[in-house]
Length: 314
Image 1 (cartoon, rainbow, N blue to C red):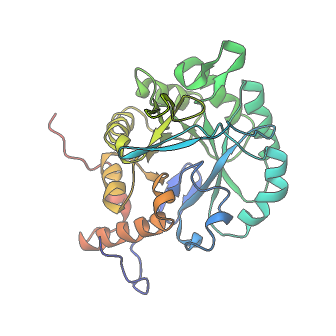
Image 2 (image 1 turned 30 degrees about the vertical axis):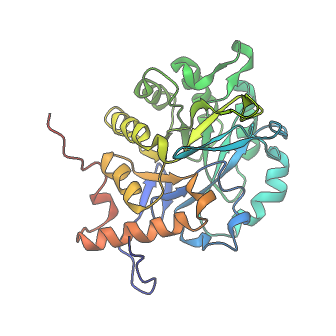
């Protein structure tokens, strides 16, 4: 798609998630954009609708041993292991930079127990420059035998309540696709107080190195992302948007503006760009420009006129 001349006034691309106001619906997906500073010399960060930093836990995590990333057909497998600096260092070392960007910074949080989610939230609550919290519920609940919070509606609701009750900024819950009915999970976190849901997180997969007959990832299994998962993500966004009243954020294989526009038409209020950042660091910025060009070309008043407009025979 042709990139719009940046001197031309943009159409109205504003969207809201709870009280979170964004200048456009394009966000960066957690785990693919570092803490934002890493991309400062590669693109114009100020053009983004929101920046979601990599997942933050109560204590620092070293992550899994390498190899931790492997390319697959139309996608990528990763088993980074949620490596991060921990909440205290994040506040001290990373937040000051985010505060100066003028773009909403959303902090993705994770934990191995409800108590950890609650404590991370409490430490972030009231920190200037944090616009919202995204809750990663794909983590295992160590107190319940390692079952992922996102695989059980009751546990997902409990985590959501623990976070929502301890902060006064929007809470977005990131849903796992590795469940029997993702719409049920969305309903559970909505009941728990979520202001929005983002989906999908990665699908579970693996790859094998035939020369060594060993797993391509040291962790054996990992999360599949990239264009390969887009049809699955689009279907799930469509289903969830019809079941909940809170905003839906679409994630999964978004490489260009047309991909993002499909998610918006399916019912997403906003989108997140992930794996594409590794291929083209300017992908998110170009997607903003492409969405603006589409809105102008089709003579729409705003991007909000496009959301949820899929024509389906009932």
